[in-house]
Image (cartoon, rainbow, N blue to C red):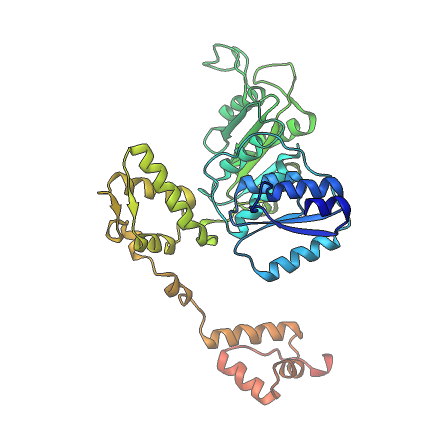
Length: 414
């Protein structure tokens, strides 16, 4: 394949990452991109990991697909690759191996891995969105580790856990005598992270006055310590995270729109654990292994327990799952059985049962559909009946049975 790449031109190459031979799929990718930069390369992997995504994207792959794959997904990706007009140059590799803790092979997590790779190659601010416990700080650290700033500090601060006055000092520092207890000058996180990355967790909880000051820092690249009168240049990339809907917060005027635009140049959404149940067994396996190592014990878990844990909704997401596994390992007699699981997990319905929970009745579905059709035709009864494939008399009976009021209007208006 590499020899062919040197002799002929190809619009698209599809290669497995793990090949039987001295060269890997990444070697094939690099050879094809070197011989013909215009060629698009899709890589296929049986192990969807952050490291794989970063290596593939940075080496110039258009995309990569994790096994087992859906043929429709492959066709769609091939179409995008062949139809793409703008072909960016291959990304340069920076940083080191990804941090442990980010685990997942579902489509949602593979998308996160790709976004991490793109974000790491940019200096633009990043906004990470996701429920509590989904691993937003792990993603922020991964962006830092794979960026050109990897050798510089990564400093995190929780904006929702500190009062407004203390947060200003935490971010920008203070001078001696600025307030009671300020017995010496202190650098804030922006100075501490000079050349590196500042991670602002729970940015949605930041007070309005602090939002103004942060916006000024992002605009001017300067900070002013509390009590100080001298502006200090700052060179720290900002990665922010939130578990609230910032779009709604902007609409409700709880969060500044201009700051939101500044922070959301790159947006990464981490799916909740209930949205990626296929990853739960992988997480369980890793957490059992980690907890066993920490406690110096060899603990196993039964398949029945894994099924039950996978069926649970995990409102606290990955953090809750990890804490639960930690407790189970600590109190285990060597093997975690179904009976050892918390009551909340045991009481949760199975995946099959959940499929039929809270489903609307057939009448309710009919009612919703009738309302939808009436709204679509502006309440015109004749057009509604035609759209439903029934006559007007049947429409009247249906509306009466379902409790849907028909507008009293002239049919001629429709």
